[in-house]
Amino acid sequence: MAEEAKDRSVAIVAGGTGAIGSAIARKLQAIGYHVMAADRDVRPVPQGQSFHACDLTKPEEVVALFEAASKRGPIRCVVAAQGILRETPAGQSDLSAVSQVIDVNLKSVAYLCDAAKAHLTTPASLVLISSWTARAGRLKNSYAYQATKAGVESLTRTFAVAYGPLGIRVNCVAPGFMAEPMKGEGAELRAQQGGMDTVIKGAPLGRLIEGEDIANAVAFLCSDEARAITGVVLPVDAGYRAL
Image (tube, rainbow, N blue to C red):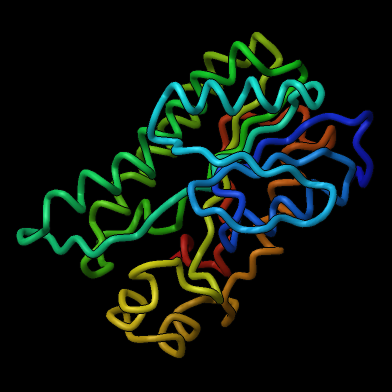
């Protein structure tokens, strides 16, 4: 993998203060990007990164994010790592929770993809974050999350075809069960799947996924070594999707 960016290009990491987003931001900074972490959850970012407070569910704030990032240099990498997990059991969900998950996990990703066309300096990469659960029906009480992640994988294919002729590659990373459950209801929903021991035993590699595992995959997809790769969903899931 190329360990140095060609110039001081800018990478936007949406959801950049979360467990996955912050790991991605650290990795992209390490290989030479200036990283702008965008999030509604305001947290300190490491020296050398920028933070932009942003509600990604509002299209005008997404445009403002790109405008702010473009002042730092040419934007060549955008990672959509934002996401929430709410309990949504089939047949008895709080529909406001369903709507919130769709707004954050799917609509805001679509807004990022749309806005990127006018602001990226090519060659450039968009990397979306899905989940191995996008193709699983057996998980309990999280159908909205699973459906939105399936939608993210569809966006990956659609924008890869649309943006390929422009020199913009669009790919997706699909994590497995993370060592650190998602913020909010993640720990509770993990328990409903049987807890840590159960999900570890269910993985062919017998391990959980660390943020650095996702970050390494994202860095590869943004690098010149992946210049012929677009429209793919790369599982980083310890083998769950193979089951």
